[in-house]
Image 1 (cartoon, rainbow, N blue to C red):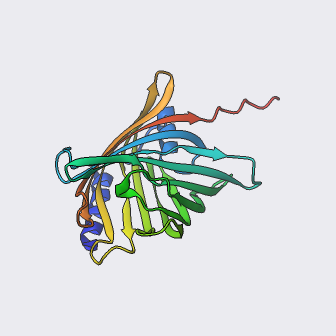
Image 2: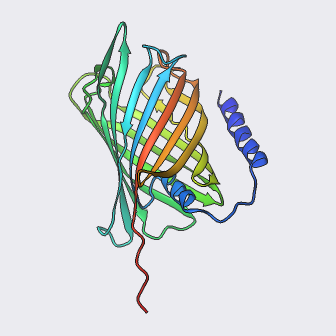
Image 3: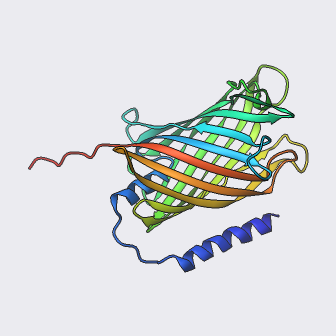
Amino acid sequence: MRKRFTVLAVGFLCVLAKVLPAQQPAEDEATKLAKATQNPVADLVSLPFQFNFNTGGGLDDQTLFILNFQPVVPVKGLLRHANIIARTIVPYVSAPTGTARAGGLGDIQAQFFFTPIKPGKLIWGVGPIFSLPTATADPVRTGSWAIGPVAVALANHGPWVFGGLINNLWTFADEGGSPKVNSLLLQPFVNYNFGKGWALTTAPIIAANWDAPGGDEWTIPVGGGFSKTTVFNRRPITFAAQYYHNLEYPGGSAANQVRVQVSLLYPSAPKPPAKP
């Protein structure tokens, strides 16, 4: 299975390298902003709304729906040589439970990346991640306070933006009972920017539940989609749509995911030119 995943990923990148032109014109403003949105630790305030439809087939009553509100806010000036990028994930979950559905909040996650003020060719950030027992939807309720490390690294090369994000969470306090949190998340991402804000992108979320029964630990998707950064009603905004198929996933989970995201962008105002 891992060999098949590797072959598919390498094949996808090889096809892109052959069909897309190697030379690109000077970047327009929309493309510059698009590449900033593809950097999880960019100096950019963003308010993404990510709609996830997890299903075994069509979008029927058995679809698991997750809406993630994921505000990203840079905090500058607290440290001399580093910025802090605060990223929060607030999930709303609607899950099938037999003939009915259960809806409500999931556990809120807070991530804090410490990243150099003047990054080099390799852009990176590291810090802690926290998971809070805020879930009101029974199917995703853990009752666990969890903590762990989070890290991201990426690079820009011409029209390409590529890198990865990784974290692991462990329960350190619990309201009692199962399940405990002991999970890995790995998200590699590759973006090819065509110009005028258009991009081809893949960002599968590979997850592992270390406490799951044998054979149910991993979720490994493959797929991708596109994004468009533009201005709507005087507000910079990014639209994205992606499809993923799970090569491996726990029993009872969905084989397919459709991900649609709308991100409101608040770029920093340009600095005025220095006086002569």
